[in-house]
Length: 380
Figure 1 (tube, rainbow, N blue to C red):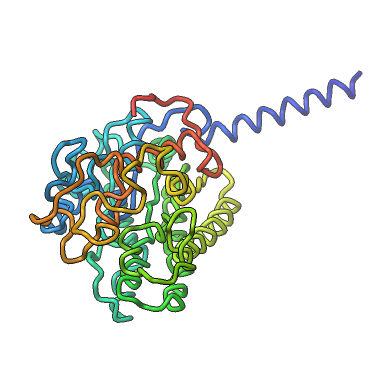
Figure 2 (cartoon, one colour):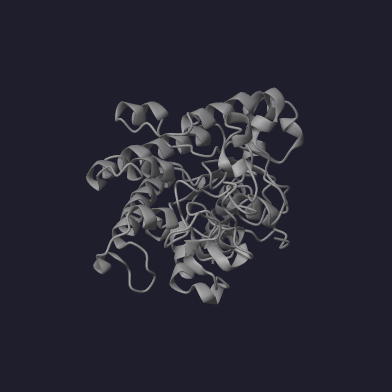
């Protein structure tokens, strides 16, 4: 009987320890996320580009027409994955960092977005040294991380205060890394050369994650790359008469999708390694690739009757993508109903596509491990 009591007591102690360890991961197990801090590129920028390059095409009509209904700096006809995520969590749309004057008023809001259109995981100097000179911004991941550090004093003054705030925050790490490949691919650099960039890109993302964990981040969602072989831009750049290069089910270019899968596989391996080193954090892989492949395989099932591979807003050609007549060019008009299209401008997706991707992440099964949203609103 004494032995039985002792084993029950031992189980209770183990249970309490487990409960306490789970309770330290605020915002994951049933608690609400109180803020979102986001990093990335044009898939995530909600207006920083306005302050860094006011000539950028995403700042002109018809961008933003479906929701805002005016350009906001988002490279989309409406909302992005970040927007849908914030709305689903019951938070306001996350404002761009550069929209806050010297970081003031940051304490009064529920998150900050550091993403910039055209940003890379690697610093711009890396590309210039290799003759890849079409990089559109110097605001790489390390620059965005520096911005985050600049606002820290206005968010919290002590490590315990920072831990409290960041413990209930969701850190969205991208998508980032896509442009590190887009720039050289669009210059027709060899895939052999570009593959050598992958471990460096993964390392840059991992370094940023580790630094954020040291600063108090507990829950980080890290997206992989989209299937670039299904992008109207890539399908135009690499169009070929060799039908064997295309997936007969989707029409996407197989070799480019394999490259995206290679990046994503390497990223997931690194995230597993980081998770093992930091057991009290929650590192969530967001599978953008497979969440979007659903509608590339069966577009009509998701309402994309205009097609999955043709851009809604573009200057003609087989995929309605033309580098000399891009969306926002006065001679270019958007389709009547963007919600029927996956691709918005050939590089970026429509609001409807981003909604489906977000749905796949937040309602499953495209986050590993599954993100807990038990406390969220369902308004999005």
